[in-house]
Amino acid sequence: MNQEMSQITRQEVLARKRERYARAGKEHKTKIINELIELFGYHRKAAIRALRTRLFPPVAPYVVGRPREYDPEKLLPPLKAIWLQALQPCGLRLKAALTDWLPAYEQDHRRLDADVRQALLQASRATLDRLLAPARVQHRRRATTRPGTLLRHQIPLRTEWVEEEPGFLEVDTVAMCGGVLDDRHGWMFDAVDVHTTWNEMRGLPNRSQAATLQEISDVEASLPFALRGLDSDNGGEFINHHLARHLLERPQPVAFTRSRPNRKNDNAHIEQKNFTQVRQWFGYDRYDDPAVWPRVNALCKGPLNQLLNYFLPTLKLERKERVGSRWVRKYGPAQTPLSRVLACDQVSATTKQRLEDDKKNLNPFALRRQVDQQLKEIESCRRAPQA
Image (tube, rainbow, N blue to C red; front, side, top):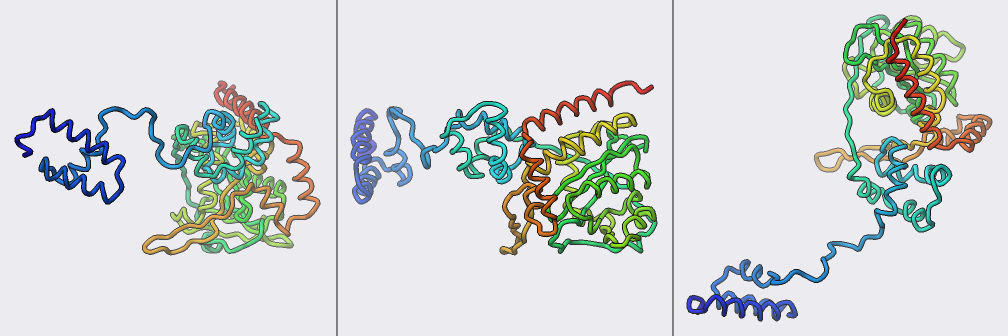
């Protein structure tokens, strides 16, 4: 019968069966499929596809999944402005930052409708990531270390942290060499507190022991808590008698430890900051003019320090769990370093009050403009011909 039926008749039969198939229940659909197989000799899957084929496009497009709850045209402009000024954080960190950044956005840019403000605050981290997916960018970084030999056997190794109080710093230096290591360029000194993720940066005209010790002393004076421990790599700027005496020969000695050679994971807290806290701001260009470093340090101790520590949430690894053949990392809630400092019992009430008062008078958008302006001045000074 399927050989004798003309093409026109086949199309007419298919059209009628498609109409019946679209209205039929599960049991009757099975009968229609069986009839089509018997009439035309189709394979079962081919019969199902033929019955589902539409002769005319649908009047309205079908929506796959749940209806959209958020309007990108309304949410994306303020969300993207905050995301860019906050250094393009992931959805989890961005969600934690919106509490501080949305009021600042309204103060600095324009008032938001109540429904837009509520939608941004209620959006999940996955929704924020989906909204910002087209704007995501990727970066790479490069780091160098010159090993030091003095005192290496006298300074103990540290491979992991167990302290649950602030004051234990991981430190490192980052070459601002423009790709040419010749010891005539400058360096950035970077330090992060393991417990609170509080960050401090300083510029170094060179990596001498005296210059490094001077900036470490300045960082210690700027911390909102007492320095209790310092962990470095095996670079000669750290592994020397000057720094050892400064840390150990005092009424309350500071624990001084180092990582294993060629094991960057031992200093994971600071290694991951060398891009987000140094390269992302100062880039990979060459800094070899001594006149630029006072400007760099004014920025690092001023608006950049406040922006990073007061308004940019960070994540901390709480534990790792073994699931089958892989490790799953569990992170705590995203918080700013300032929030973690305020939650520490070891920080005095006077210091906490001072930090809270400082934050009340700051606007992250205004801070970002100050940072960008000072970076332009630093770039102009860096490019100016040396006398």
